[in-house]
Length: 225
Picture 1 (cartoon, rainbow, N blue to C red):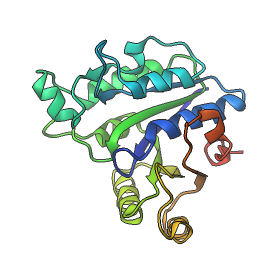
Picture 2 (tube, rainbow, N blue to C red; picture 1 turned 60 degrees about the vertical axis):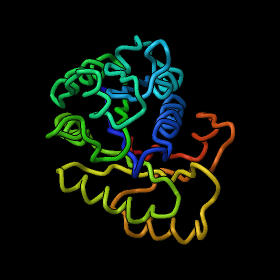
Picture 3 (tube, helix red, strand yellow; picture 1 turned 135 degrees about the vertical axis):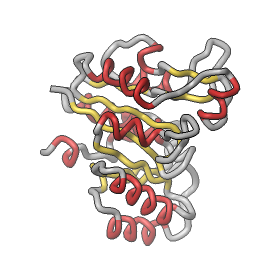
């Protein structure tokens, strides 16, 4: 039976896609069939494809068409609701939820639905991507970018997730760039204050390889082992 999680971040550019790929690699090591969906992506190449979605496709075990992985591909690398308005498109949480459910029923046992930016990124004048996670009733994985301000961003994100009635299943401490000042002290504070298990601490990797990053993750809290 498949199980799915919604992956969000404390901000944009904190490594959501990289960590999603690492989680997919870790799940594949457990012998699980994996899939991922990036329902909305802003910023595409000349063929209308988003780099994050392509990375997810390379990391999952299941074969899916690009349009299944990234059903809404917006050209400009700007806030999704602004990019959609410029293209004359209307994003709706219920529509996105239906597209995600199709992928979730495709046979994979470990499915990730990756958001865009942080928890409250708008998709239209009334809805945010949080509404998508709520409609899907998914548990949430929070990617915390270990940089200045991460404690406030992480705690506010966790508070918002709980306030929306969803469970924070776990979080990942990801180092998207150079190691921050007082890294260990910040990590200890997050471990103490975030109401969810730490799934792993991923160091800065250049190049980033999902299989290498997976060495720093544990899926026990997610898989109930």
